[in-house]
Length: 494
Ligand SMILES: C[S@@+](CC[C@H](N)C(=O)[O-])C[C@H]1O[C@@H](n2cnc3c(N)ncnc32)[C@H](O)[C@@H]1O
Image 1 (cartoon, rainbow, N blue to C red):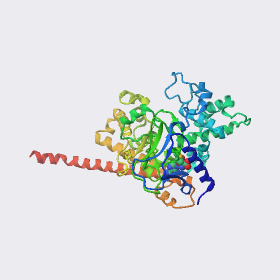
Image 2 (image 1 turned 30 degrees about the horizontal axis):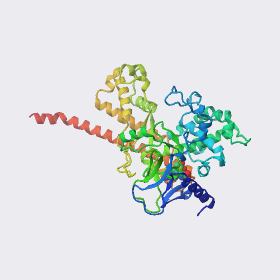
Image 3 (image 1 turned 60 degrees about the vertical axis):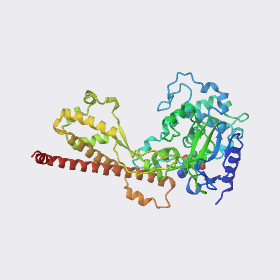
Image 4 (image 1 turned 90 degrees about the horizontal axis):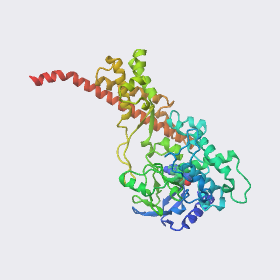
């Protein structure tokens, strides 16, 4: 069913967009209402579109960034760099670092707050009218909603307190100290601290889900070097900007359009023929559903191939300790940092405290399609290296525990298998129980998304358990072969 108010905003946004000198919009595409499947606005084709067609063009002048907003002209000293700043120029974890100009994120948040507060006076008002005021990203979930993610490590990556800290130290004081610039002339009303904090969060979440890293010529060189790889919006330290129309495109792990960053404008082109009535889709990168939910507030079946799980070193070490049953004293000495340091193979400072398990799949092809089987085939190499270094240290103090390479590998795979099973048990429901929950149409969107995330992670863990089982079985058969070897050799010698 059509919604005249929603459609009117889309229409006025489209007219506004087309009025920018240099903007183009293909006659066979249109902005559409996809709220019926919780996807907001999107763009669909109204006729068959051939491959490599320019779908629309966004002049760089229409992008909101520190290069186009008047805020920078009004308080240039705030954005001026001295050349002495740290490379990352990021706030400390608690957001307390306040020296130097604001980083890319904070700069764009300030610019967005400024343009938003200008209301009708902003050149981008019709664009703000189609930007969201509410979000499904994890930052906005209640504790009860987050509980549905169960043992997913994505919960520890939300960073609401860190964002609060940064906004309180780097955003709010700037707005308050420059109130005459931020609030349009003639308005005496000021936002309270809480309202301003809320607005900073709103702009932060908008930028997280909508902004692009704007590539420049240096990046182009980089792109030529990595020709086969899809550039991700979040890589690098390039200028960030809000790109009207490009950000009306929804996205998926299989996609059919690409944003090209030209000198004067950005163009969006079709990567393959797109039949009439299909959605035009962009790409946000090889993100697992947990990360997709954190940054963008949605999940898709196709993104589950990129799911990840974290396995803590503490868990692995506790399983190892339990299985080796070494004397407490020997164990303590063997896993001490001094013992590791003396091996000269691992800087004790560099002991990893968690390892990421993922399927390590290739990039989509040049037409935005993915191929091949998406089951886990490799266990993390960095985990194996760290594990072996620890086993070496143990061997120094208790050689009989690890007499040979065969035993070392058995210990590795069986410890890992047990650790994976324990990690799996940290999630209170099984994959089968989760799968049975999904068809229930009374589930809220957030609950469903949480089930998809936790179920995808558990499936990956199950694949990893299977893989370690196969490795153990292979070792067993090698062992048997080896046991038969002497007689084979004898036969040959005869
Ligand atoms: C760059 S915007 C795309 C335009 C957005 N649909 C709108 O109405 O403004 C990114 C946001 O769109 C939504 N989105 C993008 N791709 C989606 C998909 N495949 N399914 C559902 N929602 C999607 C998410 O809310 C995401 O945060």
